[in-house]
Amino acid sequence: MGKSAADEKILSYNDVVLRRSDLEILSGRYYLNDRIVEFYFSLLSSSHPSHDILLVPPSISFWITNCPDVGDLKDFLEPLKLPDKKLVIFSVNNNDDVSAAEGGSHWSLLAYCRSANVFVHHDSNGQMNKRHAMRLFKSLVGYIGSSSSDCNAKYLECIGTPQQVNSYDCGLYVTATARTICCWYVSSENKDATDLWFSAVKEQVTPSVVSEMRKEILGLIKDLMAKK
Image (cartoon, rainbow, N blue to C red; front, side):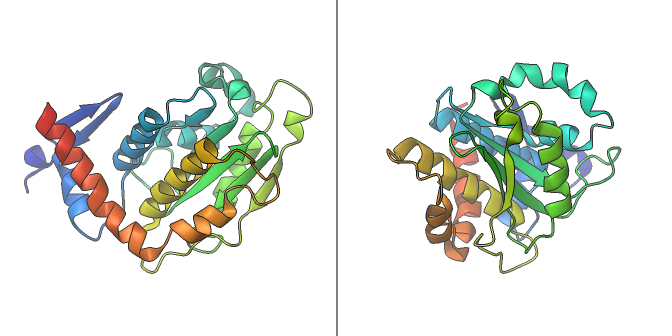
């Protein structure tokens, strides 16, 4: 596929613009890019239209992680209204080069739960992204709430996170985990602050579910394209 064909815009969904090359990524055994992760996060936001839940686009998470001066974050974060959210989900990418768009080689997920005042890192490849998740946590912790107690939020590595069985499905583990956490939040009447969504993720984010999710996202995009 030539560059011009690959760059062809095929779908605009909320603020996300997908290109034909994204279909190729979803059609094969390839690492997900920022656009596909952002598309699915946007889809989840539309599916769970709660003012309590925020799924942060990958580009925003990346900027927060790599902002050279945390003091500059206040004005940038204000539109996100983080203190008003009860569940916030971020993608984590191991790209250290801010000049390299679409860089990095691994995705993971960082979720904040206000009821437990904890940030939980889910990494499908051991603790490969722990350093980057910790950097994101440290950038956010001072801005996550309006009270001093919120600023004492803890960081937790979820050691029971389901592990990927290949080198390219990390992004799909992020999307599957994000979906499970959102569903847990909207359906759970008694949100246990000790277990949180951990059991749901362990039970529902399986290799077979993740494999099917690639086809599912591709099908969702094609359905939306057909409706345009």
